[in-house]
Length: 341
Image (tube, rainbow, N blue to C red; front, side):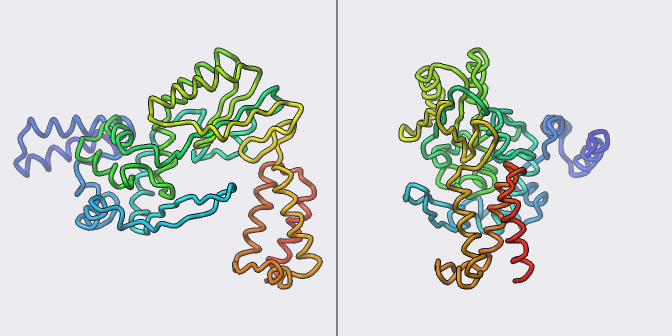
């Protein structure tokens, strides 16, 4: 959209509909503010439905009763507890994906946020913490459910959207007045809500020669520093967002022990943790020794995409360390099986 073309067309159409010049100027000022930020101009929910390509009345129903447009299930966490996942149904997912791509991705988040940012990977989060004297990892408790809809509303308002549009967008992105874990918008929204938090933490870290990154709810600090001071700072800054640190997930790793950040060892070369690689090695070994069908029967595996899943884990290891010769061998072996099945 070019503003020099948009403005006269809008003014001409508005005048033909009998809209007063005063109101036309107000509409154009609103639109120009969004245009300068490279954000889509949205006047109301009807306009939004046209932009997305979805029925206006149906979109209104989604906004008014989002709980009916999610599928809720639970997955087991590493500690054995269950994590709730609220997955949007296809139509809501389409709406949220549009909001993510057309609005949220056009708002820059902190450079210290390394998760769910286009053209970044988990490797970008860990490479800053290689060969450091101390690595400290922290976790924010109940991350997505603790980020309330008020912060999301303020975010859309700060973009320049009027109150009705901001409220409408917030309802489409939230469930039970918070960010649902499973919605495509939640992760990047969390990055934007924590933008000031990242800035405040990073300013302290710069002054004290500490390296800092955040991968969603995982915070990592490395260097040679006072651990208690960092914990106090994090707790203080989280309070401003009504968030809390998980006291059970504080790891202090010194350079004479294994330093692991988001599952990747950073002492020297970046490498997936030994346990992860050993599990892959074991699976490939049994497939080669007993054959795929016998191996699947032995472990009681029922997934039809088991080989693709195993191949994905191998490729993940190689994305972190492309020079892992053993994984290169496993990849060749599993790729051969993939072509045979």
